[in-house]
Amino acid sequence: GEDVEQSLFLSVREGDSSVINCTYTDSSSTYLYWYKQEPGAGLQLLTYIFSNMDMKQDQRLTVLLNKKDKHLSLRIADTQTGDSAIYFCAESISFNKFYFGSGTKLNVKP
Amino acid sequence: EAEVAQSPRYKITEKSQAVAFWCDPISGHATLYWYRQILGQGPELLVQFQDESVVDDSQLPKDRFSAERLKGVDSTLKIQPAELGDSAMYLCASSSRGWGTGTYNEQFFGPGTRLTVL
Image (tube, rainbow over all chains, first blue to last red; front, side, top):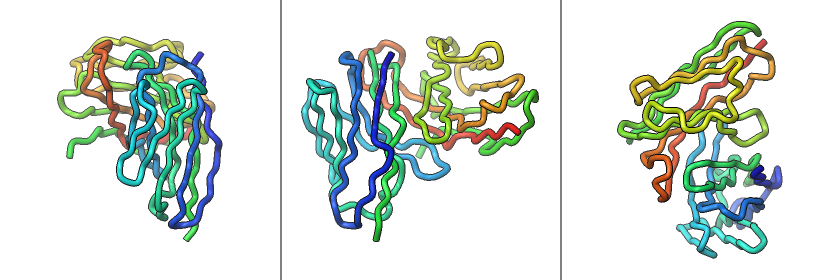
C-alpha cells in the first residue's frame, strides 16, 4: 500500500528557516501537497506540486521534489510564531485518492 | 468565503451507542470525502462520494459505519454501535473536480467533529 512518512517534530527559532521533510513510496503519484492544521481545526492547503516539477516557490514557501528518491520537502522562510502548527504531506494517486503522512509538529520559539 | 460545514463540533458518547455526523460541502462541489484522523496521525479516507454515489469505501468498517449522500449535496456518517477505538476527529472535505477527471483536485476541509467514546 501507499506509505507517506514524516518526522514527528521540528523546533526552530522565530526568523529562521524551517525545513519539513517527507518521503513517499508510490511512484505513480500525480500531485503532492502540503497541508497545515492548527489545533482543533481542519486541514488547510498550503501548496502543492505536480509530480513532473522539481521546485515550486510561493512567497515564503518553497517546495522541493526529488522524484528519484521519492522525497518532498517544504521550506518556510522567516518562520513566525503563527507558523506553529502540524504540517501534513499528502500524495494523490490518479488525481483522486489521497494519502497523508502522520504530520510534523512545528514549534516556533520567540 | 465558502466553507465546508460540519456538526456537531464535539460529541461524547458511551460505547454501544449510535452517533451521527453531518457535513455540508461547498456549494457545487461534486466530490465529498469523509476522513478519520486518530490523534497523532494523518487523515485516513473512510468514504468518497461522487454526487450521490459511493466511489470508494474500501476503508469503511461496514459492520458499524454507514454513510449516505442522498441528494448529492450534504452527507451523514453514522456509527452504530460506537466502540472505544472510534474516538478520533472525523473530517469532511469536498472538491469541485469529479472522479477520474485527470486534473488537479483541491480538497477543502471542514473543521471536523471530535468524537470521544467512553
